[in-house]
View (tube, helix red, strand yellow):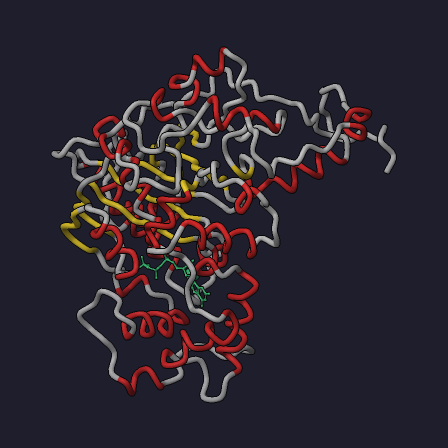
Length: 431
Ligand SMILES: Nc1nc2c(ncn2[C@@H]2O[C@H](COP(=O)(O)OP(=O)(O)OP(=O)(O)O)[C@@H](O)[C@H]2O)c(=O)[nH]1
Ligand SMILES: [Zn+2]
């Protein structure tokens, strides 16, 4: 490759020569200074006692975690560096990037087993670890908190139908809703993740090592490093109402925890209920915020029940081509045939973000999924009411999915009869 080529508008001086001559330093064996000088005491009550997570790539001895920040994008970063567009030594200038609204600390942050899949101090790195930053440690935020206005056609329709009333604050007459939005990257404390699933840390680390094709040797060679920045998508939280009232027992909370479905969420595909239920969740959140509470939408990047979109589309074909047509009875089976399981979302980790927000009770949980409800309750959060999707919002082609979920134990008072499940209700491939 020609190392002098440069594209894009970056003015960062290139380190091409260094890029090609820098020694490769293996991080797979102990002797690591950061792990000794900045140990992480996961779940310690105060930031200084807990210590910062350091995933820098500049100094292999300056790390106390496995993996890299924004792990899901690390290969794009590798391309940018290899192509000479990004200086591998670049350190972010974090001026003015601090949270737009303070969140926490909450008592839940100081229980090591309560939050194991994100860093509760991840948005407060500048504030909490100023001393270490001043010493030159490369400490980066894993959470960013900002503010926005969002506008969804379903919310405008709810205003027109008289279900929502604009108040000029939470909701404007043009359908704009004011939100605080939070982007969260995963940070796994491996002993806690293993305990959540009732497996040994050794088995977890071995599984992670093998299933990533040996991408992170430290998983097996560095038992002194307990924190892993996994190369997977994180989540986004949308908060409606005043987030500074979170953590107070009197604050009413509405919540939808939603898993990504690009086809429906973004493109409006009618094969499932994802976007309609998400929009209904936003409506309930706005109502709750207008009554003085906080509405919480958690959007997890777990496309196709964490099986991925290719698997999902393969399954759609299999469902629609099978003898007897697309029907609820074989809905999960068709997924299992392709993926080996019908779901890999591991909702056991999902309540972490709710504890990070200081939530101890959800007044209105906008979900019918027992796979979400059970871990939320088991993690110590009370759920007062479960809000099903209104029947009128279920798209025509989604009735196969809805019947299958209800038959599999979805929260409902209308479990479909066996005959219903056998009946082809979904469209064929050419319809
Ligand atoms: N693999 C696969 N995934 C699907 C299919 N239909 C929907 N999904 C995925 O299933 C997930 C649906 O998640 P949610 O909208 O949170 O719904 P849920 O888990 O059924 O629970 P509720 O909260 O009651 O809606 C998303 O990740 C979708 O991408 C399908 O046919 N195959
Ligand atoms: Zn969907």
